[in-house]
Length: 498
Image (cartoon, rainbow, N blue to C red; front, side, top):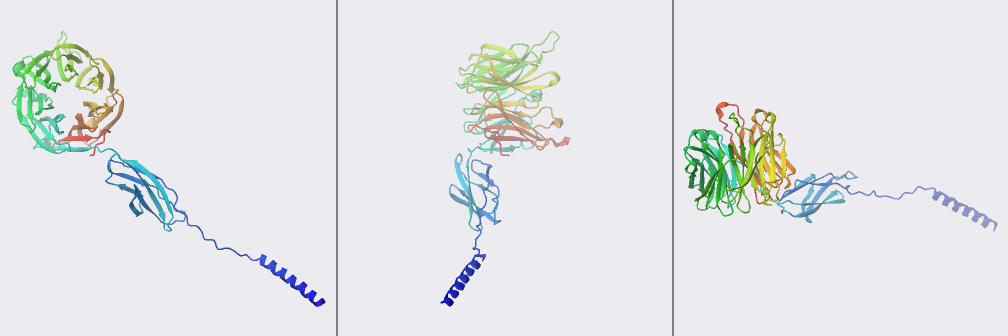
C-alpha cells in the first residue's frame, strides 16, 4: 500500500512537470500578408472641344510596388483597356453634352482603385484662317471691306494694280470667284488710293470706288454703274466713302466733293436712289470750310445719321484742327440736328447701328507730339453720348467695329502704328454692351505687316475678319512677293484655328 502511494506521488509530479514544459514552447501561427490596392489619384480634364476631350491623371502608386495598368470608361463603356500611359483623348463626341466616366487603376493581383470624372463638350464653331493672292502677279494690293451675301458667302473688296477687286468666298473659306474692274480716270484718283466699300444687295452686291457706284450680279458681272460727276459736275473731284440701304430698299451713298480748279472748299455729299436706281434727291452738306462725310446709319424711321469731320479756315488760309461732325437728316435729306466735338485733331472711321436702336461711332484723335488715342462712343438717336471708351496709344489702332449677336462690341485693328521697322500685328478687343473692356487678343506673324482691316458679326455668335499680310522684305526689287489677303473666322471668344 505504501508502495502505491509513492508511485502516485511521483506520477502526479511528472505530469505537472510536463505541463510546465509545454507552456515554454514558442508556437507561431502562419500569417499571410495582405496585398493592397493602388492608392487614389487625381484626374484633370483638359482641352475640351465640341467633339473631343483629353483627360490626364497622376500615376496611382501601388503600396506593394506592383505594376499598375488602367481601364478607362466613358458613359459606362470601356474605351481603353490595360494601358500604361497617363492620358487619353476621346474623339467623335457630341457637342453640348454632359459626359461622365471613371478610371480603374489595377495591380497585378486584381486589386482596383476607381476615380470618377465628368465634363461638358462645347458648342461647335467654325474657325479657320485662309489666305489668298491679290492677283496673278502676287504683288501687294490694298484690302478695304467685307460683307455677307444672302446665301451666306463672303464678298471681300479692295484695290489691286489700279483696279478694284472683289472675291467671293464660301462660308468655309473656299474661293468661288475673283473679279477685277478697271476704270479710266485721272491719275489724281489713283494716287489717293481711296478704299472700296462693298455691301450686299438683292441681286448681288454694290460697291463704291472714287466717284463711281457699281452694282454686280451674284456672279460678279456688272449690271449697273453710276458716275457721280454726272450729278455734281465734271469739274468736281468726288470721293465716295460709304453706302447703305434703308428699310425700304432705297440706297444712300455718301462722300465728299471739291472743285477741281481750287482743290478746296470741300463739302459732304449724299445721294438717295430708289430701288429702281432713280435719283430721289442729291445734297451737299457743310458746317465749316472743310466737310467730309465718312459713313452713315439709319434709325428705325429711315432718318439718316451722318458721321464725318469738319474744320475751319482762318484768315491766314490755315485750317483749324478737324473735329468730329455728327448730323442727322430726314428721309428728304433735310438736317434735323448737327454737332461737332472732339479733342485735338479728329479722324472719323465708322458708325454702326446697335440692337437697342442706338449707334456706335468709331474714330481717333491726335494730340501733342502726334500721340494717338482711339475711341468708341455710344450715342442715342438725338446724338447724346451714352458712354465712351478710349484706348491708349499702345492698345490698338482701330480700323473697324461691329456689334456681336450678344450685343458686345468688337473692335479690330493693329497693335501699333508706330512700331520700329514697320511691323504690326492683328489686334482685336471685345467690349461689353456698356463699354467695359472684356478681353484683348493679338495674332502675331514674325517680320510682317498685318491688321484687322474690317470685321462682320456672324450668326453663330462669332465674327469674321479680314487682314492684309505682307512679309517684310528689304529687297527693293521684290515688290512684296509674299503679300496675301487673310480671312479669319473666329468663335465668340476670339479663338481662331490657324
